[in-house]
Length: 144
Image (cartoon, rainbow, N blue to C red):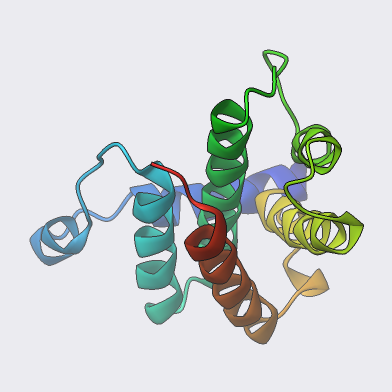
């Protein structure tokens, strides 16, 4: 268990711990559309060979998009809303169907594996596919 935690912390440090002036200058500035920020950071990390942290950030973009969809569709969320819970509520209001919810659950599972340091359970290609699918979902469903 401690190995998993240690690996997860290493990913986070790799994402947040860049001290070089070039890296800091290249990172986007936070703004209202956090899903765009998360996706931009995920793409940057992926291009730098840090696909584990890219998976975490892409998952965060997906979760933020779902949260915005719930808010714009007047879906009441508990304080600690989960992707599964948001999916279920968004299906109830007819925003998407079970197949989309299943795809989102799979993407979230990949993010969770990355966050727990279970790096042998997914590949760089899996993360490339994840980035594409999250980008597509955000483009199709993002609300401002």
